[in-house]
Length: 626
Image (tube, rainbow, N blue to C red):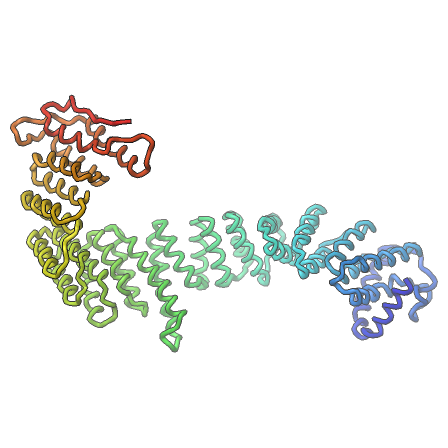
């Protein structure tokens, strides 16, 4: 002990000025400890090591030990874990016990904070052996030392130990534990921290701990604990904590990870009232609202997207920059996806609303945005929307605000056809030809547009213009032309186009057969169906789902209708219709999934001609091979 006291004397000479204030604090704490020990404590007549000018009867444990512990901690260093600090403290305790003195709690706390993490662990054990129960502050000191040394598992062990001894952690404890648990890869501990805090109604949340709350929200989202996230947000709101943009983003993304739509809406609405929703959260809300069918909320988010982009762009001196381009791409993508969802007559009006928001800001629509808008308007059969979009697209192309792209021109042709505007179809296909953007796809779409306008001459003219430019019609082109002829009941012309397709195309396509079957059915030429099916079988063309729909329509038309030959095919029963449909379903399942049970690939082709040509339908069966 004398040697260690001399070490303390040496350190005191170096740090005398620094230690004076600390001595006053230690003496104040130790005075309180002595009062608790009572008047029966035995005091020696001298001090260990010959004394340092103290009054007679003063015990070194009272005045010398705190300074000695600090000096020893500086000398030994917190990086040591060889037990020297513990050995030193144990000798101090033995010396005090020999004189009948009790070691105050504050002395052990000084010893706890003087060493490294291993020392802190040993000191906590020693304190319990001396019946000096460690408190929350002692554990906070130990956790701080251990976390600084990256002993994260030790922090978690002490957290569990505090729960075992029913110690109430404070916010500093929770911060230490959350940080250590994340670094140790133990998210369940973070979840446990919030579980403990949420059960304590007396805990008041503070603004300076917002970072920890945000971290807890992120972890709860990863743990798919939506109720805990909602309860944390509720406590933040009740205690008046002001969330920043990062906190709102974290809360929204955590609830999104939990797929908790109601919580996402609540957090987004609350963030909007505080005007602290980041632009990327607005974009995420656009997608989420569209997925959940919340069209009004999607429009609100889109309005914020365009306004935020305009506001962020207004203060920039340079129009370029990677950040601005990234914002533009994200905003364009969100608006484009939104317009691609507005495909019903009830929602197609939102297409013009979105385009209006983009036109009024610096976020001008590009050719992809126009393509999505035109496609939605065509699917919704909204001629007034198509007309407005085409007029504005025409002006933007002339002004150079939108790049001329064959995809946009193709969608313009298709939209004009869906609106039944033959002049617009001709105008946009002529623009494509003038710009040299004509290809097989846009001419095929033009033929389909002419079919939508019920104009056979225009469809045939588009095919001829296609050939004059050195482009050969493909299966899609022939199918569109056959469909157009079939709608007008021109079966002979349709069959002629079909035969031409069979001669010119290298491979037979089921699409062409489907269009021809539909054209024959529309024209009432049922005597041609059997030969078409036989040719389909000979060409080794496998029927698809569209073929099934066409045949089901033919079956309904054949019900009670006289076919050529003078005899009447009996009424097709519901059982026979289900049999044919079931055969097609089994065939499709076998072809797509390679089922063990094999179905005759020509079931429908063998059955339907027999149904049509047979005098009695009751004897016809569907052959299914195992």
